[in-house]
Image (cartoon, rainbow, N blue to C red; front, side, top):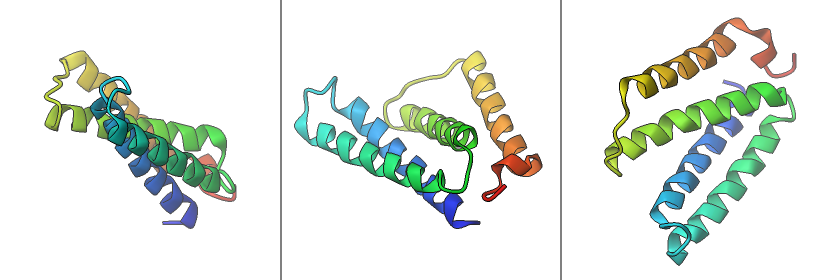
Length: 113
């Protein structure tokens, strides 16, 4: 895995932490989670900017948003008890399939190309 992909993975983790804290902030009424949101998103965007040094913005954003959404859907289910219907699960599956196609078959997603 290249350094750009490591930056991107950690950017996704930071974004997931920030979005989880956003839910926990109860519409910005709890200071602790609000601080976590701000710090986590700042870290996420910084790391994403490092990935953008060698990867196209469309690919970085597709992977960042797609995997972040997948992780948040899982956290929403496990921690917050939020259920997904079949259409939502299928849609998430299609997004995941798109990320796999980009990663496996596209030279555009390879840093430096």
